[in-house]
Amino acid sequence: MRFIPVVTALGTAVAVPALLLATAGGAVAVTPHVVQQTFQDPADVAATHTVLCPAGEHVTGGGASISDNRRNYISGSHPNQDATGWTATTAPINANRDPRTVTVYAVCT
Image (cartoon, rainbow, N blue to C red; front, side):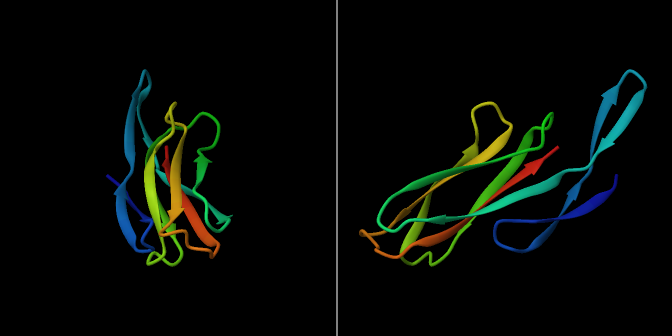
């Protein structure tokens, strides 16, 4: 089995094994890859963002990171409804009046 490095939401690299899919012609290796997007959220309100996998792929994991986690938090992080991407919701703590930067990650195959 081949292992590839994948950057996690915490910014560290981890080894992720390539997946093997059985087909009529035999096994085919599918290499997971990370799709990410960074958003600028306004101050004083919650915001939700979804990062989608390329067409025909599905999400196998994901996460999010947020700037200034002492005054903001990630209130939700999960696959979207049809498993084609990853959704994260962030919010300020105690009506924080500073905007925040959010990066959402989707591990796709």
